[in-house]
Length: 230
Image (tube, rainbow, N blue to C red; front, side, top):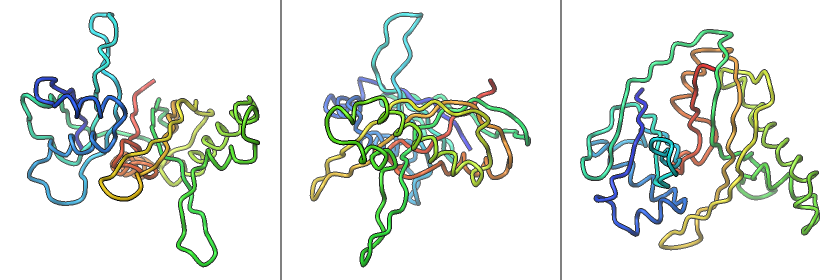
């Protein structure tokens, strides 16, 4: 695997494309990052996470898009458009290792509907639904119910992904996205930011999880687990 830190060159990106990406346009970001793999014709060979570029020398944030890309092959150089700082990523994991993690995921579950094809349900919206519209949905009780649902979704998947959560993870930003299409309804999905500590229970399975990501909406910047030694 390869882990890349990818910056955008303002001189090579159109103003419209830049504004779309900075406005959270996950589909535009996905299309842009595909250009790092020009000769590849198979299924998407990468996961990514979009953030904002760090401030330089302690100054104000530049507000430019920054991408972390995990791929099964090295990205091609794209001078004048994308600058990729790439390194080989071969994690050495052992049972019991404790690692700090960050994850942006799309927490959904399969929902059966009688006589219809199964649908995906947003876990946080389902937790919010019992609260009446208005003040109840902005209440602390509603917020806590949604956070608990988000944590539960990740806890339920931890064992099959090769780790456990020794402490409750922090649940950060919850966003709902609508990506316009040329025809038909827009693509809608939600994302949640997690941060916390995990403990390795199955190194091989966790390595596989890193390569393939967690959850759905991976083409739109979800699923990539970022690890570091605490």
